[in-house]
Length: 407
Ligand SMILES: Cc1cc2nc3c(=O)[nH]c(=O)nc-3n(C[C@H](O)[C@H](O)[C@H](O)COP(=O)(O)OP(=O)(O)OC[C@H]3O[C@@H](n4cnc5c(N)ncnc54)[C@H](O)[C@@H]3O)c2cc1C
Ligand code: SF4
Ligand code: SF4
Image (cartoon, rainbow, N blue to C red; front, side):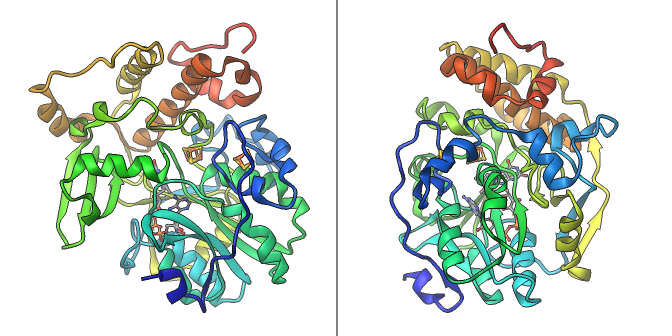
């Protein structure tokens, strides 16, 4: 069934032009716009200006007196959260799409720009403009891959929509913030999700095929903060696989594109509110970054239950182990592998002894920063000087990774 047609009254998928060829590119949509040259100053993969944009969007830079801001970007408060009445089909409880729903219901925006499942492949994201609250239900859930979200800005404008909300991943939100002042909008709300280890939808299907004999029956996948991947199937079955038991060694070396190995913003630091799960210990994890983010959260009223996030364990040794493995992989050597008999034991032990809550989120952000430095050093050393912001260097410093001359 063509689900986009089915939802045509509330969800609009305009035709989008072809992408211009670019080297490091996640096709955020700017190369498909009427002025593709804007990639030159909008792109996260060229010369990102995080410190400047954070100060402009949030009114201040990261505060060294608030140590978690080095990892997660500026925020007013962090909470662990869930909707009291979780939404069917949502990735977690549906906070993200319910914020979109409330913005449309209350008339705060004319439209929400986000992703729906592609009618031909439910795992493929398809950029859509949602104009009525009911349409947000169709967008629930996570899809793997990237699609040209920002190519929707011009069709939205042509329809006269001047008050917009955009739900996006960090590389999309970066370009949006760079171009925000040129868009002629009266109001813009940005709801961000963290993002890491993304890949093309095609590659993701290869991964699904390693997890099940009938991958077409998998409807849900999540890398949970308790070191398990959760799968859900069409017939309602669920399966949990410890990270250490995943068939990662069977994936081709280029499974993760260079963009997603080297991008420098895990937690969507330029969003008004970030909706993730990493620091949530089994629940969702929100970072309210500015006044507009507070406004977005308040739209949920008593539908949302919040509490202070917890933190347990020590990330140092898992992050050091990760660094060693990335060094070997980046140097072309096989990954240091764990003997097969030890894997189930460690898979059982990790959720009990590994870092949890905020400490887990800090570990993941540091791991991503390590990947950025080591993969760029190997594949694109000349890009390091402009592509790696200072905060990334500060994150890797405690593991002995420092700038070499020219970096
Ligand atoms: C590729 C990817 C990797 C992620 N990795 C992490 C992670 O490592 N740690 C973490 O804390 N969170 C991660 N997230 C975010 C996590 O999945 C969100 O916390 C979750 O989607 C929000 O849950 P929810 O129930 O509120 O969302 P829902 O209410 O179900 O809404 C999900 C929203 O995400 C949008 N969306 C879905 N797929 C995509 C996509 N491919 N590109 C752009 N937008 C999309 C949908 O259109 C929808 O608006 C990732 C998200 C993606 C897309
Ligand atoms: S990611 Fe976006 S801004 Fe960067 S090159 Fe691709 S289309 Fe252009
Ligand atoms: S991992 Fe980074 S580059 Fe890749 S899609 Fe996510 S935010 Fe974009």
